[in-house]
Length: 467
View 1 (cartoon, rainbow, N blue to C red):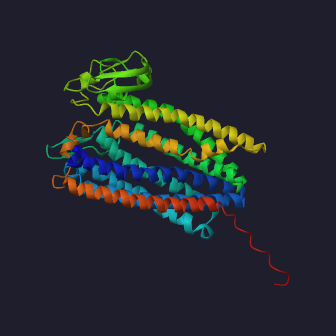
View 2: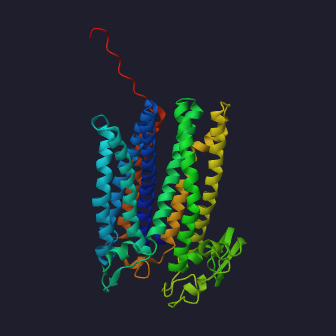
View 3: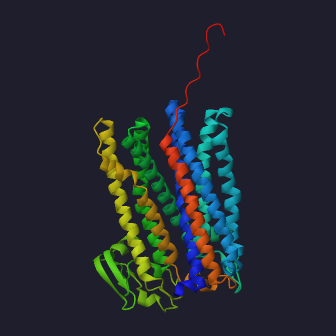
């Protein structure tokens, strides 16, 4: 098999495994940071010991997840020097800056205040403790910003000079605020909040199903439902921003999303299949719907895959595409197409699951006997946003191929020339085994914490008379 002997494909596979595993924990920890802060805000207002217990409960789950996310992130950074040495040599002057900023300006902020949240509640004022919970969330959100700045620069490079053997930064803010940074950041952070809201709903539904911690279960479902509705609705304008950037900056990816081979308005295919050999796409499509998403005009024309495949030309004839934005070469079209449509289908499922959560909460508040089926659906609900996030990253990363840095460095030219296929096979096997063990350990810890539930501290006994 070609996969077993191709060092480039194996390097990509290894990095994909690391990213997928890492991005199970990072979105969850960022999103749960918000719910830790919300729980503490409620306790600050009410003084109810049950709300204090909720803060401690979510802080424990956040910390467990945060630790695994940090450990798996270190592995990814090492791989830049081992498997992707030529990439590191070419973009090190640029890519290293946001990674350093993430460590110095975000990770330390998050870690310091997480220490306060875990160990200093009784040593500081309630107000400072509340501020600390919000700063933990702010630190995680800031960390995500710097990482997405680095990744967005690879998608839409700016603020640099190509010196042939390497790219050198000439405008830090131009590179940091490249054309896709803001849209991708809003899209990503909103998605991780959606994931966390579904996890909170799932835990609440679990308590309602078991009929334990019922009050906490109702509060969790209510809080997760409110945050989930807001974040799912916000995803619509953020998706428009993202579609506009992709259409302007990455026309081949944009065409691949819908398997559009000929120039013209971009349709949206409800269900379909792309035959890359015959260059045809079959399926049920809504004409102009993707053009409408990207430009608010269903008649806006975009170049098709036949144009983007070989052209080293200007796309100035298309109002929705940045001139001279592409140098030729299409991504794996059907793979990108299917991942994109899976993401959209899962987004629609999010709405259905929120409706189920709303109906369930209404029944619980009225004291009705709740059926097990909707509660089980809610318990397994986090799988939907998790798969939605992963399919979105597949679209982003596979859709920019054959480039690792768009229009500057091809993936095939970025790998380490001294790393062989057998070495990669060995490390991939070791990664899979180790990550499986790590995941089982994390899962046991988190499920154990969930089973135990929020523990309300007993008030200290009043002193006896005469003492």
